[in-house]
Length: 81
Image (cartoon, rainbow, N blue to C red; front, side, top):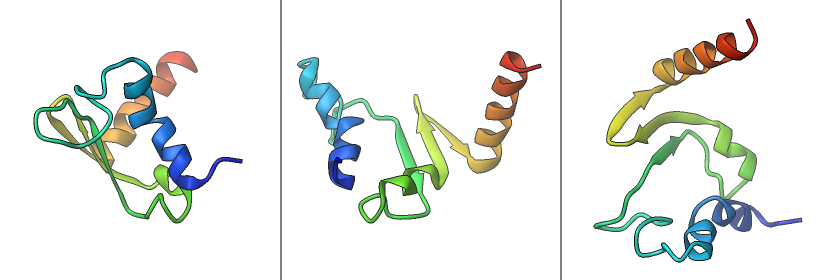
């Protein structure tokens, strides 16, 4: 049992702190590197809501739901032909 906020921190700020890189990533602040997920549902209400991805900002690129699904299908075909 972790709380929803503890689950979210385990994938964001906690790794940054562990690796001594919290000045570089782990939270959204000016000057930090960030890949972001825009969700349709609040993950603080239920951590399973992290699967309700609408948009991803990855390495400066915006990926919408259709692009994400397409890339996931390509990966699945590669490893499970």
